[in-house]
Image (cartoon, rainbow, N blue to C red; front, side):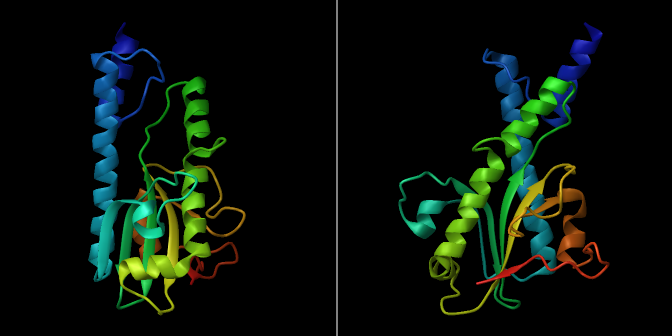
Length: 202
């Protein structure tokens, strides 16, 4: 009983889900707590961007339809859209909060939700492909029509993931929030020791 109680207390303090189809006041409380922590992650990302850049455009939870119109597929929303006109840089951020899993089953569930078939990463990358396929629409949305801009396609997580810095197409960059400020400062290095080039020009 003590172990079970400690697990639930940790879930409430740190976020996390029991992955149960049974919904009661406790599991609904856990879902609400995860939503609160996810919003806090977005807030931290926004604050870090504002400290380093002057924002010309910033918005959160931007439905893809606002930029690209209706599509046959639901592409969801961009958690953070931040544009600095001074540096001509656009930051598109998928922010994912999740806690440590307490057992193997939980870790597998976490991984599948993030990277499994049609998981969070899949939807994130599909949204970023919209930008690559229709760049003028995103430029019009942020007030940068006709300009060349540098885009950061980011997948920011609440804790480090044991994966490569970028996906195989060198489009999506995975950054834990712990080193997000280092990323913004250009302090991350590529494997050959040079400053990592992690932006795409459109």
